[in-house]
Length: 262
Image 1: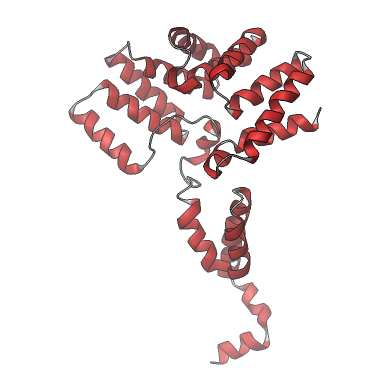
Image 2 (image 1 turned 45 degrees about the vertical axis):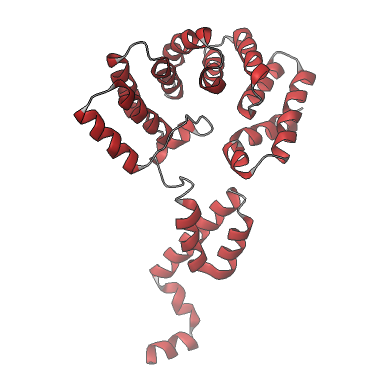
């Protein structure tokens, strides 16, 4: 009772408690994340209702949205998704299947999970294990190429991606062709990359493709054409569903940055 009376008479004692600062830090962390994701209602709740709302947000949005998964390596694959689940249960299931059956497809599926998590070393090892068992699997070849590209090894990635893109330009819904364009750009093959991006945009309107295409057009002195591509990106984003806006966030920011420099 005397302790409560002391707090009432001197509220500043609360802020001398390290636990209070941990709670405040957690709340600010969740508030910043909510603002970054444009979760406005959650942001207001966290700001007004403090720790309880922040705790609910952590479990309902932050963890569900992959905020804590994959460690620091996840930064390498932001905006470069491959299809596939990335749960612990899925990893254990695939590891068990590999232990008992050792099939190429299970190695490939496990590699895709690791790739999505940003665990590129493990992904590469699993892609190579898949190709050892089935060297003709086009998905494994293309995904290994993407993995090597994200790992900063475009010279190794380019021939793999080029091989699959030449056979099927629409492979993986255009993602293989986009990765090839990125590898060509990283290798300084700008004219080839411009042609590859143009092929992508014949069939797909990905923000990822338009923004990087526009960036190369700017470097080639084709400012008006680049501006048209960037305007398309921003116009599409204004009417896109929420999940797509979240997925394309990195490219929208890049588009706005390039537009600001025009």
